[in-house]
Length: 137
Image (cartoon, rainbow, N blue to C red; front, top):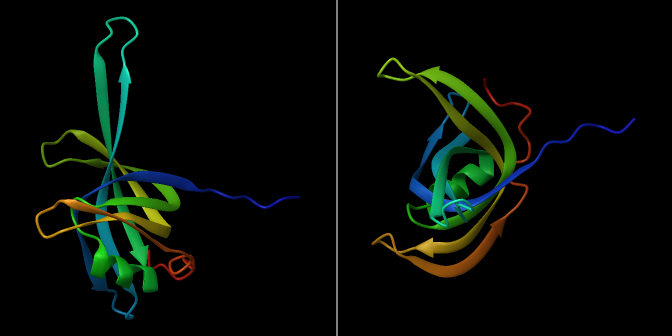
């Protein structure tokens, strides 16, 4: 019998600079957000439509250290990992949901300069975050 496998790939723009921190046991973890925008033409009205989905991305260990150093608001990235939808109650008392990705691989499709503008470049970081056995949650 074949094993199970899950993989999600998103390509989008970083919404906030990555934040690097360390767990009590010294494991590096970094978080940032990515906006993925889809656009289409409404067949009924001919109107151009757009929808943006936000993802919270978490990277661990060596990948987290790279992310913490280089991921800046405005840059374009491809994230490969596993996704989980989480429901929660917002500050306004309304139910909310988030899409959270634990990154296994990240490719930088360009870099953002200090003004949030992006420069064409592509750098890939693979495997550095693939060992998630000891994630402390």
